Amino acid sequence: MSSDYTNKTGGTGSRRPFDDDEFDYRKEIEEIEKQEREDAERRKLKEQAQEKLAAERAARASEQRPESASSVKKTSRSQGSTGNGGKKSRKGLIAVIIIIIAAVAGYFGYSSWQSRNRQAEQQAVTGFKDKVAAFVSDKLDGQELGTHEQYFTDFIEECNTAAENSDLTAIADLETKFAEVEAEYEAVLAGKEKLTGVEDAFKSLAGRYTVTDDYKAVFDELRADIETAVKDVDYSGIEDFASRISGLEVNLRSSNQALVQTLRNGIAGLSIDEKYITNSESAKLDTYAEDAEALEKNDPVDYAALTALLTEWKAYAQSLSDKIASQKEEEQRIAESIAAEEEESRRIEESIAESRWIEESIAESIAAEESKAAEEAARKESEEAAKKESEEAAKKESEEAAKTPEEVLAEYPEAAAVYEKYKNTYIFSESSSRYLTEDEVKDMDSYTLMIARNEIYARKGRIFSSPDLKAYFEAQSWYSGTLSPEDITESMINQYEKANLDLILKYE
Image (tube, rainbow, N blue to C red):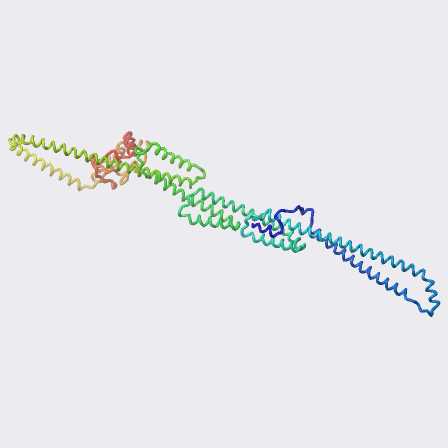
């Protein structure tokens, strides 16, 4: 709360030495009321004394009136009784003096009582002010109370008003209310502590998970609601916050698990030829893998750290893959350049050889002319044989072309059996992107392993001359033969395929 509370109490914020157990406001008020009653009784006694004094003065005046001069006897009796009257007058005078002394003493005693009463009232007010000031400085000053602040502001204003007016009755009532206000203050502090726990739980959630697009709106709304509750010290929704945080954590965990799997798939799908990377680059990739495995073994898993690591790993692996692709393109360009130079060299050599051949052919033409007739006969015979052979081959090829791949495959029972098991699919679908294990290949028969080994080349588009392999792969929907065996170069086979070829051949 604002430090204005201290100024409103009229104090400095520090308590004067005052102990509530040593000064009881109610007892002091009762004592003051008792003294007021005693004062009223003293005033009444004083008035009675004054009335008595006035009556005695009237009596003395009546006794001292002069008698008639014609009454000698009365005068004589009056003179004879002068001694007794004098005695009475002296007694009355003494009584008057005593009453006056008592009145004076009562006046000074009353004044002393009034002074003590005023001091007691002032002490009560000052003690109350000190208590209010202490409550403000010790508890309210510097304390953020949100929407509860007005409650305490109103109470302190009420206390200040009672203290300024020296209203002891109001002060006594406010003393009774102090316990209620202090209890409310403790309740607010307890609520703030619970809100702090909610805030810490939310911060922990935000620190352990990556907020995906699917749950960003929910996350932002919950964060705004918690911030508002903390600002207003509104702890009425603590249970609701706990439930929302728990539900969001379940959703984020599921979302982060899917994100982790997506990132891992992306990393696994990158082709990195180890021949093109340095030892330090290879070590860095291994470090990424080890760190990711360690994070996944933690309980609970820090998905924010894990997804950040996998994202960094994927970016690094992608940069290596791009670099390798550029290097391979450069190598291909150089190889093509070298091939072009070799082709040009070969063409020159052929030109020279052709010139030599022309020279030799001129010399041989005469001898060739002599055997021309025999050669012509042989040629015709050869042409006829070739024509016949060509017609037979064309007929056979036509018959073969009319057959479906499955019909051709049926002529090779072993290949057909393997085809029925792996129809339109692969024996090892991942043989080009991961290392096969011995457990995967050791129990297969040699013929299936032979087809599995050639499956790696078939993916590259190799054309097979072996009739059973040709029939098997042409029956597969995914196969398209476009390259001769000579066209399949070593650079077309990656490290996984090379290792898998060796492994399969070992058990084949």
